[in-house]
Image (cartoon, rainbow, N blue to C red; front, side, top):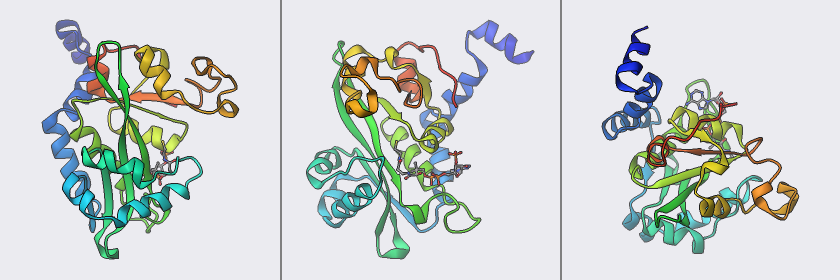
Length: 237
Ligand SMILES: CC(C)(COP(=O)(O)OP(=O)(O)OC[C@H]1O[C@@H](n2cnc3c(N)ncnc32)[C@H](O)[C@@H]1OP(=O)(O)O)[C@@H](O)C(=O)NCCC(=O)NCCS
């Protein structure tokens, strides 16, 4: 009743207000701090200077992504420009001599018709032996910590994330990602993100991909969703 009255007076849906608060600069800072306390021994690195000074992580990411059937293998040549612009975040296990155990990257997609730059959240991975509860009942939410850091740091950027991985979909849901239709993206950005091969899409025109909005979902962070005019949301699976 109170929430309905609130909505009637302000025009803001209370659930959206909660998400807006959680993803606001202050809310996200607090949640980031609390989340990272749940992963003792793990250091999160996104500083361009640190990353470009150290060479070892490039090979580790190439090996980690190469071992994941659903990820594109990423090489140093691809990673370095993103790292220089602070768009790579690594999770490093300080108890294992700085072994890289997780990663998340913002890849550039290009500009939309209004000149706004868009980025794609990708190369999101946590090595199997560091995934949630992989080390016993005490959970290590490293994937969550990576996700939150990236969204918080780059809150002013327009970001999208596509995936068929249900765990990645749920991670996004925990961080206020809004599930929308691919057709709500600016047309040029829609085309830029839909580059899967024909054996996956069943068509040579990816605008008509058969898995789009079905097993393949696009999600956008709450601030991006608000900036593009709050398009209708699709239900989460
Ligand atoms: C996607 C990925 C990074 C997530 O890793 P993770 O956060 O450690 O979580 P897991 O995959 O181990 O999660 C398994 C289950 O643990 C539980 N879980 C994980 N994090 C949780 C959290 N913070 N709170 C409560 N439960 C949680 C959930 O039950 C989850 O299953 P669900 O997603 O269906 O709800 C990891 O699965 C991965 O690296 N996959 C391979 C690469 C890949 O496909 N990346 C996505 C490309 S888009």
